[in-house]
Image (tube, rainbow over all chains, first blue to last red; front, side, top):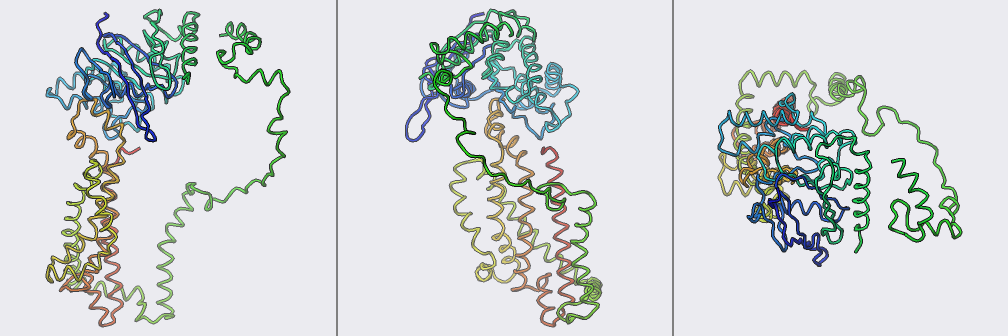
Amino acid sequence: MTTGLLELVGVSRMFRRDGRDVPALADVDLRIARTSFVCVVGASGSGKSTLLSLVAGLDRPSTGEILLDGNPVRGPGPDRGLVSQGGAVYPWRTVERNVAFGLELLRIDRAERARRVGWYLAETGLTALRSALPKQLSGGQRQRVAIARALACEPDVLLLDEPFGALDVQTKEDMQLFIRRVWRDTGTTVLMVTHDVEEAVFLGQRVVVLASDPGRVAADITLELPEERDLDLKRTPEFLALRARVEDLVRTFHHAT
Amino acid sequence: MERLVSSDAPAVSTDAPEVGSDVPGVGSDAPERTTAQRPPTARQLFGALPRRRPARPPGTVLALRTPLRGRTRTVLVLSSVALPLLTWLLLGATGAVDPRFLPPPGAVWAAGVEMAGSGELFTDAWATVRRILYGYGLGVAVAVPLGVAMGSFAAARSALEPVSGLLRYLPAAAFTPLLLIWLGIGEAPKIALIFVGTVFFNMLMVADAVRQVPIDLVNVSYTLGARGGEVLRKVILPYALPGIVDAVRVNFAAAWGLVVVAELVNSQEGLGKRILLAQRFTQTDKIFAILVVIGLIGVTADIVLRITRDRLGRWVP
């Protein structure tokens, strides 16, 4: 249970701005256990997205190290699937072929690929839309495609970067239930970045609060909420108390330099 | 929620002065507002702004970026073709302009039919089209890979963009004498002229189309396990393809202009050459007929490329 799958050890990331090195992240230590669901919250400027880019391998830390199963992360790879706010689905590929993208790069036979794609389409409720083009989909459906596409590569960690940030409130809540279910059905590990505290508390088993300027870990809270969660949970006193606690932390550490 | 509001709301107003910024929601400057004298509001501070009388709603034709009604559109489209044609017919019929300068449509049609009948029209048209196919085809074959490289690799961009951006502004027609000296008087200088006159434009426009590929799409491909070459082949190229075809379509018009210039200088056959011969004998009806043929071939090619682009870009939102 507590085997550290993903480890960030003393991770900092500097950016050069106006001839000075400005830290976006400073000395972040984080351990994400296998099969856990961890949410990272923080105000804008807290380096949330930088953190995810580093884990994804799209960017390199200035100092420190990121380890996946003990091996240092050297670049992007299918063991760390990434879903961004816009989803970045391939607009010329149908839903089905979007989900198949990662599998098409591997030496697996057609039947096996079809079997896997079929499973992820069913899991994400996209079977009926398998031949649709992304332009025919709603924002929520596009995010499902992006999530299914990442999951089809069997990532050790699914990295979600504000995946529901552009959706309307109702769709967002549907997607929150959806990602909880998918997480449990696939047995994957989720590291999600969001600025929405309610979302973080509803989804995560753990919430990591980042402070701004420079981004650093301000608090790490293990949530004592039931594993079976529905939307009614958001109205319970326990949930509201946790939410208020995290919100206070986010506010306190927003520009508290 | 209600419980929170009812218990917290009074607490905020009483505690605000001491707790200050720790209290969520109410700003830290709240105490000044309530205890000290309120500063004047913006409304009290400034006089009323002058108001402009509301704009009259524009008619359908003058409304900015508003689609036209179907009928208005049809009328405008038809009249854009019909009006010049009608003017031409009238000028010819009334004899207001000397027919040697502006031959009537009937005479142009007759000249065209005659040239078609003798077969020279087809020989000339084919000679011209063939030059374009070679010259422009070669240009596209060179420009697309280089443009894709310029759009994908910073190194290729640094190496190629300055030089192609410069050479693009050298008027291709001015190269004609040089090309004749270098390549003789056969087909080579004509093909080379079309090549020189289009390749740099195509390179830059293809590079631009390639740079439209969102970086998110490239990045996510890496996280799905794609390698550099695979990203280029399976992500960048498919995304850029409609834009590339569009660039090729736009620059095709330039190729037409250049082939006629090339033929005016030195050639045995070709539509441009035929225009030059007709000018020698003041056969304006022939010149007009050839211009119409050039226009028709050009429009056909444009439509074909447009359909190709639309078919390749069916996925474009």
